[in-house]
Length: 343
Image 1 (cartoon, helix red, strand yellow):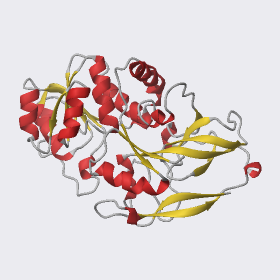
Image 2 (image 1 turned 90 degrees about the vertical axis):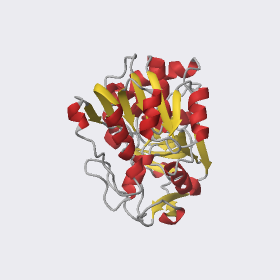
Image 3 (image 1 turned 30 degrees about the vertical axis):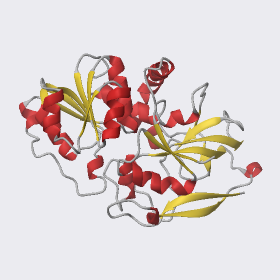
Image 4 (image 1 turned 45 degrees about the horizontal axis):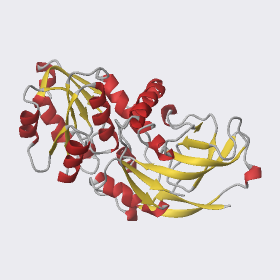
């Protein structure tokens, strides 16, 4: 059997482009010759996430997933697929599964082998009426990251003022809606008027365009009493503005720093405000909060059924489109979860 996969051809310096990847042919084992404990999966949806940009460097940040090797299979990319053949207990042809071997058309996955701190371990899904790709978005790792970020800043009970940056992205758009449904007053920022209009008119939250209004002025206008909670997807100037705007004893969930992914990091110059205001800054990774997955899925699935949570997607078709999908996402040209449909 023949298939195809994307590999990293060169580490990008600056913006990511198709020239940094290569599509390579892959020989698959005959289904009846799979190794014991292995499952052959035909991938149908594969994820495109901002954190992948950190792994396109020669060395990824300490403590994070390792950098992608050049001219080698990529791993740690969450994917939905259908079992073609199995020599592992609990997996049968036709099962819908998720696993961590994305950016390829087929994958041979070892059942029970932990991946991505457990969140990417091969598992059978029961989608019911949910679109399968929702398990890469609101019912999967994106939903878990959004929910866990609120949990680490004690934000699962409502009644406070919450700012969410990159609020039209895969995680940010879920944070906005989960927080709204929990009873927080949400301020959302995004990088285009179209995204701001969607956040304001469709999701019903206060929103501003950080490219056309200074961060500090916008926050003073929309949250004059200060910010109690900040969900940081951007870092840099956004984190600096948050420190200025935080109320006493505020809490910040440090999820991502997308402003630094393709440039030199710019840390906040006013970090002493964390001391002056008795703030709590909590770095976290959704994959380290698997204990919240079932709770998150139950609550989010209920909100989706009730029409209280929507899951926007930007979809690219075909394996070759994955690099363009990543470039568009990092440049802010996508809304919601960025996905590649493989079949």
